[in-house]
Image 1 (cartoon, rainbow, N blue to C red):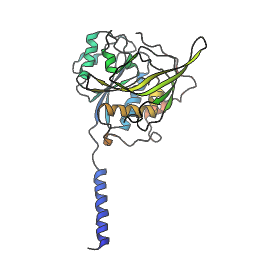
Image 2: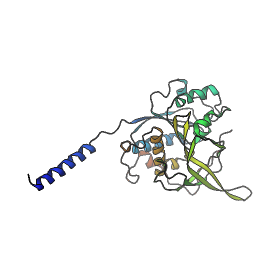
Image 3: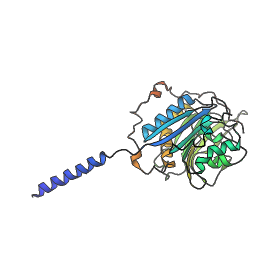
Image 4: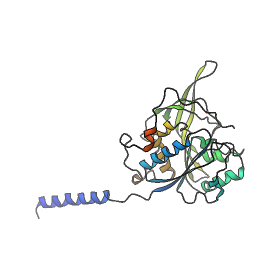
Amino acid sequence: MTRRSLTSLFVLAVALVGNVQAAEPAPKPLKALLIVGGCCHDYDFQKRIIADGISARAHVEFTVVHDGGTATDSKIKLYEDPNWADAFDVILHDECFAAVKEQAWMDRILAPHKAGKPAVLLHCAMHCYRSGTDEWFKFCGIQSSGHGPQVPIALTNLDDQHPITNGAANWTTIQEELYNNLKVFDTAHPLQRGKQHVKAKDGTESDVEYVVTWTNTYNDKTRVFATTLGHNSYTCADPRYLDMVTRGLLWSCDKLGDESYFKPFDAEKHKFEWQDKLQPPQAKGPKPTKAPGK
């Protein structure tokens, strides 16, 4: 056999291996439960933005539970079932029920997470279930009691080496709510800091800074990704926000290092139904909402 023939066979073999690799099936999608409801937010819009945006980027299938109306004291039907989380690989808490204070109810919600069920906590989830104990905040990783006015937040990465933020650029949101940090637990690992330039009623101006994105280890084993960003729908629809939350979700399931879970995605080419109705950011954001009571 000539050297040219051997070379041709080698090239063919490489091509066949490449085709086999390209034909490998996608991984079994992660089953995610997104829970929304309560006061102060456009959950009808945001539940579609979050579910569509993440499932376009990664192999994740969503079930969405939207319940509780616009009240802060709703105890939704989902949590009446002690096995409410069993069918899912990860839970996304995006509800806003600050006035639900019963310890037994909170314990029912936390039970699967104490047992190891991964979680993603978005925005007002940090202001929920204030039973008078630290348990919900230990789950969150940071305790927050409120926020300031809606002003753009300048985001700075605190850990460029973490797999969630590695390669992500700093950016500035539109008008958003900067949640305070009453306590950062030792189990939390800050990923992003947010800074707002705030003008007080007396005319004085100052910069306010808090951690806005982090990971947490709950009960010594459960992976939790959390961000206080996401009050306004346009922030939720920002590709940079959705990229981060997608990576946070995969991290919480210990799948971020597996490239097979990512789908090819180009924010300039992909278009979803909800984008047709999405308005560009205005010079002034929507009327600010008040923080839930302590």
